[in-house]
Each structure stands twice: as structure tokens, then as C-alpha cells.
Length: 91
Image 1 (tube, helix red, strand yellow):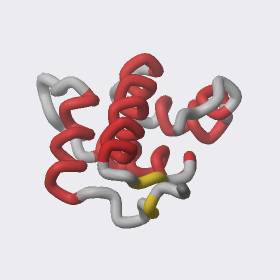
Image 2 (cartoon, rainbow, N blue to C red):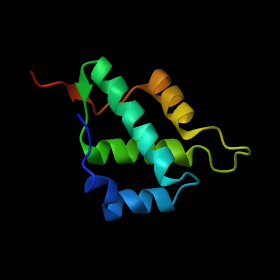
Image 3 (spheres, rainbow, N blue to C red):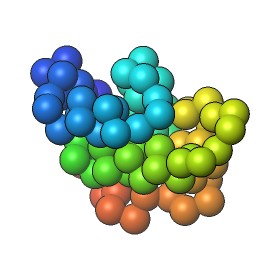
């Protein structure tokens, strides 16, 4: 599973990035990581759910200094909480 460049250029995606302390490259890296984790767990989630999950991860760092790498935050969240809205992969 991957996202098209169109989705990574969508207004919703860019608005989420703009409201965070992380740049587009960090968001793309974090999205790739999360997709790989879901795939290895034989799960999938729609683009909207991934975007919302990453937004929550980004918001968790408000007031933190220095900022940890975004992908590390996402990894920690996934290891601790998983992604409740994820569904089993279609065969």
C-alpha cells in the first residue's frame, strides 16, 4: 500500500503539515514507516486515517524542545497504541 503524489499534495495533507512543527519530508518518511508497520502486521488503513494518526503524533510534541525525529514519535505511538482503525489486509 502506498499513497499517490496527488494525495501527498492534497490540501488536507498540506494543511496537516502546516499545522505541525515538522516538514513535508518528515511527514512522508513517517507515513512510509507507518504503512510498512501496518503491512508487516498484515493491516491497512485509508489515507485519511493515516493523516489523522500522524497529526495526533505531531500534536503530541507541542511544547517539546528539542523536537525528536517525527518518525521516532510515530514508531513510539504505534508500538504503544497501535492503530485502532486499521483493518486486516485484503487477500
